[in-house]
Length: 443
Ligand SMILES: Cc1cc2nc3c(=O)[nH]c(=O)nc-3n(C[C@H](O)[C@H](O)[C@H](O)COP(=O)(O)OP(=O)(O)OC[C@H]3O[C@@H](n4cnc5c(N)ncnc54)[C@H](O)[C@@H]3O)c2cc1C
Ligand code: SF4
Ligand code: SF4
Image (cartoon, rainbow, N blue to C red; front, side, top):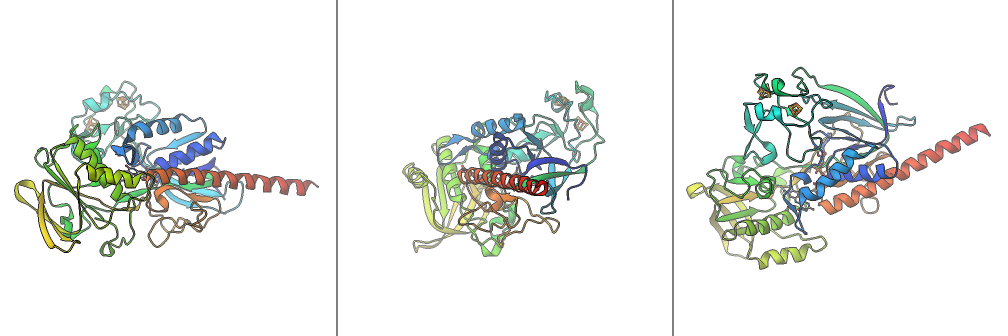
């Protein structure tokens, strides 16, 4: 049973990425009340951090921001940001059988008072590497997380703050709260949708790729930031020395289909995002050579094969080879040792930069306290993957997007719509059962 003072909603959505936002909007538009619990300071998930999206090359933030704004302004959606889901259980009976414990991490800024004016950010003297920009540029210790973050509220990074008081002295609404503490609270709901997405496999996970120690080896999300219109440099530059790279290589399956890393599965999107980034690089750096070392290209979606053929026609070189290892090269370059699958044996080529096409691992590892069972690959288990891919082992708890396994944006959105429909149907059946039981009790 839910705690007596838990806040109650029709549906609890875990994760404010594109899948969670789509599911929340679909349910709220049908009249259901929805709580979206998001562990980051902003909703939007990975998609708001991308440059453009395959296969249309639409600007990612232009199509994500309206959905984020629609969710934030929807009267039936409540956003809980900087909130980490601690546990989720269901089936304890009552009208709100889903019980969630949530940890609210401190923002050190009063959300209601902050007007997003950024005066604190301008006054703060502390510069820290900005993870939102791939670590390539700096941010202040107090800042709005990124330009189109929702909510547009400041966030103070207490680990790097030197408590100089400058932010508090300039804030026009006295919103800075140095003494905020984390707190836990309960949410109760009739249904839940787990849309907790993914993280990339670590750039330092593999010895043969240098464990993050080779300069100018970046991961694919860092390259998204270098290509983004509001990226760290506003153009593509090599991080170690600011030089325009003349030769860039992609290493495919750099964290997927690899038993040595415990990730035997294909992450599905890496081939297509590498093809997309290679095309964008050819546009941004017309004189640069772009090479993709691949085992096989999986262009599985609508118009994806044509997209791949267009990349080849643009002059991007696809080398069918398993990249065996990386090593520091001449003048900041990176030497790629690879085994050519066309039978030419091993070879070494130097590139100015290398991008690792890292794979996807689950964004949330529910602990023992959580009732949602996982499959062998660590993603949420679905009980009828062929016919009802959003059903989990727990009645009333559904899954959408990459939380259930690697997939692209189109499939994540389609699955989110399906999860919302399943949740709505579940609540309608639940209401009918209660009405019947009440009718029988009266007669
Ligand atoms: C480099 C790269 C480029 C890509 N390019 C494309 C492309 O061009 N086109 C395309 O179709 N796809 C692309 N993709 C894939 C795309 O990013 C995913 O399909 C999409 O983001 C999946 O959305 P999601 O909502 O399922 O997950 P996410 O975007 O990961 O969102 C999940 C959200 O859940 C939150 N969360 C996790 N755990 C918790 C918790 N315990 N409590 C609260 N909140 C939690 C996370 O903070 C996150 O905001 C790309 C992927 C990568 C890595
Ligand atoms: S108190 Fe901390 S966050 Fe505020 S201005 Fe000083 S260093 Fe920056
Ligand atoms: S905390 Fe104050 S100064 Fe900073 S953005 Fe909010 S209102 Fe502006």
